[in-house]
Length: 317
Image (tube, rainbow, N blue to C red):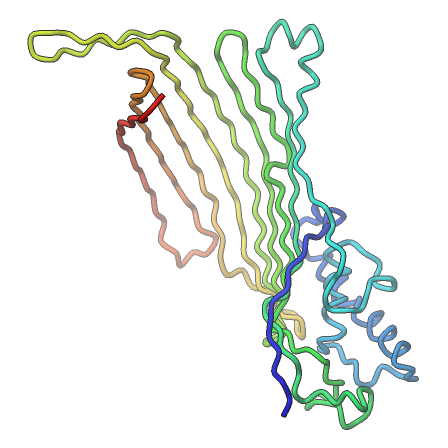
């Protein structure tokens, strides 16, 4: 009796060659044209004179064509196997070397440039194909209803995820206790579904500007009945303003049909004030405001505000 094997797979990846591919239309066209190149390679590997059995919707052809297009690799050279064996390093870099220059030393207490990149390739569920004929993998006995060769593994879908958090960030503090932060973030999620032959793309970009100021040794007088209690500590103020755009598009592989199914532009404002009442006691006030504008007109506009005050006491030294 055949044994049914199931599992998932994920490995770090690099997609940086196609990180800035606009709205993705050209990359999707490359993906579809790559199928012919991959089909010819599969036929050559099998020792066949034609690509019959490796159709345009064949899983064996779609997967490497997809990886080649969205990783910026040559379809004539990319590996044809399903699972990759070598993880590719991602990174997070912070550079503070500008503080070695006199002008930066004279004007800033810290100045940091940052960049981080993370990407992964994942198989969203696979199991061995019980219809696969291992004794005759390229014969008619191993063809499915679409006249394609049955693959050894059946895959529900694969995804590619890419995240620049941040793409670039500048974080600085002036010698007068004023701080400033500016960053750009970008992310991309691509999900290829073999069950309905579609590609779901979620692309996002975000811009953040933040300012802060620390008032040192600020005195606060609180009246308690007939007596006054005087607190002395640092008041730390932070405000962040951000704009985030994300869009979800579903692309049909077997026909010309690209449909926007979701997305929004989110404008957010965050304010935080921390005051050290003592070494172990801190009071915090926060205010958050979010105003989304949705990409689909049938979604009602919303606006949310939240505010609050908290007191935190830390035990011990």
